Structures are given as C-alpha cells and as structure tokens.
Amino acid sequence: MSIFSHPAYDKHEQVAFYQDASSGLKAIIAVHNTNLGPSLGGCRMWPYADDGEALNDVLRLSRGMTYKSAMAGLRLGGGKSVIIGDPRKQKTPELLRAMGDFINTLSGRYITAEDSGTSVEDMHIIGEHTEYVSGLIEGSEHGGDPSPSTAYGVFVGLKAAVEHRWGKSDLNGLKVSVQGVGNVGFRLAKLLREAGAELYVTDIFQDNVDRAVNELDAKAVNAEEIFDLDVDLFAPCAMGAILNDDTIARLRAGAIAGAANNQLAEERHAEVLREKGILYSPDYVINAGGIIDVYYQQQAGYDPQRVQEHIETIGVTMQEVFQRAEETGQTTAHVADRVAEERFGHEDTVKKTDSAAA
Ligand code: NAD
Image 1 (cartoon, rainbow, N blue to C red):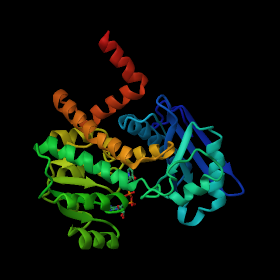
Image 2 (image 1 turned 135 degrees about the vertical axis):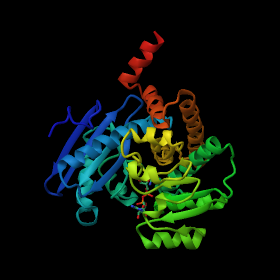
Image 3 (image 1 turned 180 degrees about the vertical axis):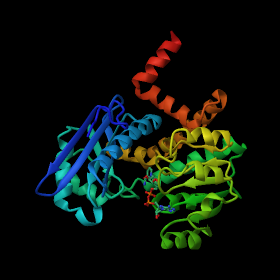
Image 4 (image 1 turned 90 degrees about the horizontal axis):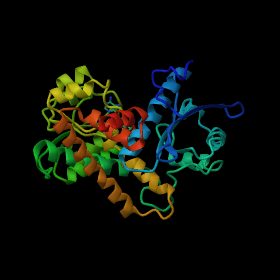
C-alpha cells in the first residue's frame, strides 16, 4: 500500500498505524496540517472492506478537517482517525482504551472527538487513557453532542444562501426538501419549520420520517422522489457524493444548503451546479458548527453564548464566499478552497498568491 503517491495523500504531515492484539484494535490516525494549531477531528469506527478503504477515508477526512477549521476561523489543524471494525459488534471498552493509548503516542498533535460509529460515551472511555479528547463537556444542554450546533450553523448558512439567491431574509413559505432527518437533519428541519418553511423530508428509517411528519408537519416523500421536487432549496443531511450527474440534472431547487460531508461526487460537479444556476453552499463551510462547539469544549470555561456567536460567523463567511464567486465567475466550492488554503498556508496557494502579488 503506497502512502506518498496515494491519490488521497495531500502533503499530510503524519499518518500513523496502530494495532493492539489483546483488544483487537486496528486503527489509523492522519494528521493533515497543523499550521494553525493541533489537529482535531472525529474518530470514525467503520467495518471497512479492507485497509485500503480505511486509509483512503482517513486521508480524505483529515484533509477536509484542515479546510473546515480554517474556514471556521479556529486555531486548529486537520486530523481524523479511523478504527477498522463494526461498531455494533467489535467496540469494547478495552478497544477504546487502546485507542486512547494510540492517540497519546502523538503527544497532542491529534485531538479526537465523536464521529460515525462512536459516541460521547465512547469518548469518555477513550479519555480514561488520553487527555487529547474533546466533546466531553459535562452539564451543558447537549452533553458534548455537536449535532445541535451543526444544525444551527447550517440554518445560519442556509439563511445566507437565501439572502444571496433571492435577496430576502424571511424563510416564511420557503419550500425546503431535507434528505435525512437524523441528528442534524431533524434539528435543522425544526429550525426551518419554526421560521415558517414548508418541509419535504425523506429518510431510510420510517420512524425518523414519522417524527418529522408528526412534529414538524413535514410532507414525506420517498428516497428517490426527493431529487425531483419543485422546491426552493435542497438540504442534503444524509450521506456524501449526493450531488452527481444524475441528481443535479433532476434538481429543481435554486440553492443547496445542507449538513452532509463531501456532497459533491466529484469536484467538477460544482461547475455543473453553477452552470445550472443552483447556488451551492460549500459543505465544510456550512457544517462547521459542530467543530466550533467541540473546539470550545476543549477550552476552559465553556460559554454557550460565545459558541453561538462564533457559529453565527458562518453566515458572514458564506456571504463572502457567494460574493467572491459571483464577482470572479468561479464556483463557490473553488472560492472556499482558495480562502481556506490562504488561511492555513497551503504551500501551492501561498506560492500562487505570492507570485501574483510580485
Ligand atoms: P445521522 O446518522 O444521525 O443522520 C443521517 C440520516 O440520514 C439518518 O437518519 C439516515 O437514516 C438517513 N439516511 C441515510 N441514507 C439516506 C438516504 N439514502 N436517503 C435518505 N436518508 C438517508 O447523522 P448526522 O449526525 O445527522 O449527520 C448527517 C450528515 O451531516 C452526515 O453526512 C455527517 O457526516 C454530516 N455532519 C454531521 C455533523 C454532526 O455534528 N453530527 C457535523 C458535520 C457534518
């Protein structure tokens, strides 16, 4: 397995592998960039088909965290960890403590948090063996879960998209389709409903759909129908790669603003959206509420008001990205990438900026 020539390798500073025979832990930590601070990113546990799939995931996800934290104005770098295994069958306290030992070997260059397949409770167990773990705050309303903050950040960013696309701040009567009404999607839908939006929802779990229908007066549609609706805005809050040739051709929304990570199947789909006149909210900019919250959980004296104010800056950043994209004729995804790279000092962008200035 190659690292330095791997397609997802992007000047990562460090990639560490670990196995612990007694607990069965097999894990990888990738530290992409620490120019702005220690790398922080979730610990994902997933039954990867093979080691290559796990490596690909951790390289891509850790890079994404660098961009996300830089855009959110945090003094953090980008990192991520993956545990290879089925969380429903193989997750034990011993395995999680061994993960804590692994994280300790990086001496604080990587700080972990919850992610798919891990929970706040798991972070407490990892925290028995390492201090480099976040998302553990006691006594707060959300108990360390970043999802409410992510949903709030998406709501703020979505309003910026509506403002830019239609020149209005009122969401009353706006038709919004939400794909995935789980931890983030349901909370986002609730905020939208409270603001007067008309909701269309889908989810692969019927009880999640029922909750949105019963509590938020949402209309349920099936998993495929969600792409064909005559709505104003599409909010993808389920899985990645959802914006592809097939779905973009079908979408009738004028804007996209959702929580899912890696929404574009390929980079070029940002251009396909632009050509179709659909305003795309770059995923890692709009879904940064959770990392902002987790960052403050790391600091002494967690202040929910301060966290909320920081999350609200997502709206300003989104407006700047939309504006710059409009002025330059570039895609919003391209603009966000360049701004993030300027902030964390990506060598290529800094060189280009320097030579343009010279
Ligand atoms: P979740 O698992 O609680 O919710 C996702 C929902 O999507 C589930 O209810 C699931 O059944 C549904 N779903 C999956 N595939 C679907 C499909 N094909 N069609 C319709 N519904 C489908 O996860 P979450 O924490 O709400 O995260 C949602 C997305 O936001 C993920 O992509 C995640 O990576 C991203 N995200 C989450 C956070 C956070 O703080 N939780 C932060 C940043 C990004």
